[in-house]
Amino acid sequence: MSLFDEVAKSWDEKPSRVINARKVGSSLLNLLPVSKDWKVLEIGAGTGLLTFYIQPFVGKIYALDSSSGMLSVLKEKIEKYKVSNIYPLFLDAEKELPEGEFDLVVLHMTLHHVKDVPSLFNRISSRLKVGGFLAVGDLVKEDGSFHKSNKGVYHFGFSKEEIFRYFKDARLEPYVFRVVHSIERNGKDYPIFLACGRKL
Ligand SMILES: C[S@@+](CC[C@H](N)C(=O)[O-])C[C@H]1O[C@@H](n2cnc3c(N)ncnc32)[C@H](O)[C@@H]1O
Figure 1: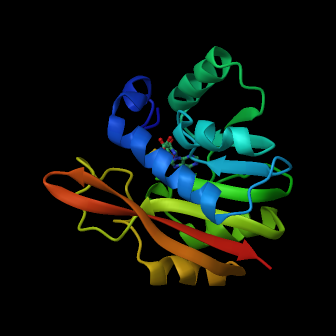
Figure 2: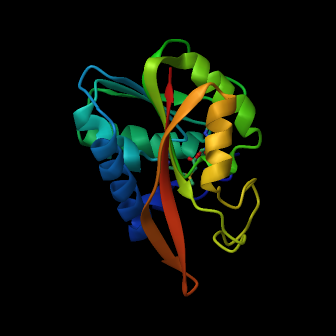
């Protein structure tokens, strides 16, 4: 059972998660030339907070997640809102990515749960069309106090230098790194960035 299966049903009840997805989603829509022709892969889509936000502006979104619990909630929402362009995929991205070429691959609050970032970014790069984008929304480097438990957390956020190095090593040109929001927790502010790299 995935760590996220247990929290899936109540995931959307925390307003800070919904607001964060909205802030990252709106920044993504402002910064990238998003189009209705785009085929998008979201890794760690969870219950689809970001997926639903960007869905009206793109063609198809493949919403990949390794938690069946999170995906069941996503599937319920797809039925409830009668959305026809979100395709849930039950996969562990550290082991497998779907075949095909994508205009955009996006991760929202997922990268800090990925053990081997260089390996994932290399595989993502090979799935991007030339000119396609990788967009990452995540925590700016923090002191390890953001999560109640750090089980399954492999990175305490990321600096701009780290993310750009990962992009370059995966043959992606750094495009932008911008702090787009801040989550208040434990009396502290945790800035959230959106970083994009482009396949040349
Ligand atoms: C913090 S949640 C974020 C979910 C969603 N993006 C959001 O913003 O609400 C991280 C998600 O990444 C998924 N995840 C973590 N590691 C993964 C992996 N290796 N492959 C696929 N999904 C993964 C988890 O199951 C979880 O749904």
